[in-house]
Length: 126
Image (cartoon, rainbow, N blue to C red; front, side, top):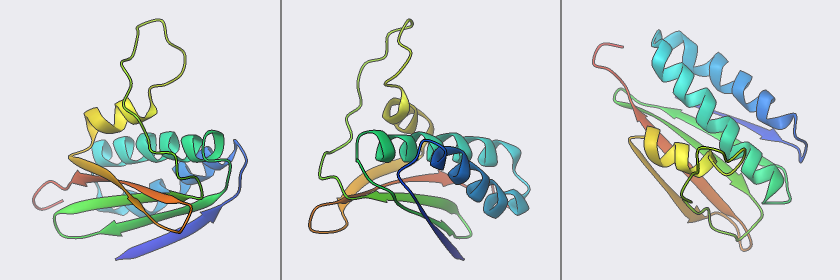
């Protein structure tokens, strides 16, 4: 199964992406998967809006074994996993993806842009 939705360059797009992912992933009946997927997509969309200077697209792919979420934007800037200080109020997005996703990566999606994706493993039978 695949679902996709475009988003605009607006801080509210993070919340819109959370709702979109929640609505698609919730029927899998795995609360932890839904929670992590919605958190990570909101971080990637926030990065796309803030650092990518663009809107973009969220694509959700669901297989028997995994949920893959991809966020595209038009910026060529690569995401960076930065060390997080306990007092930091920003800069945790890619760090969270790195820590919580089973797999993640980035690929060129357009001449100027990129697609950042993450995968979460599905529990057998879920």
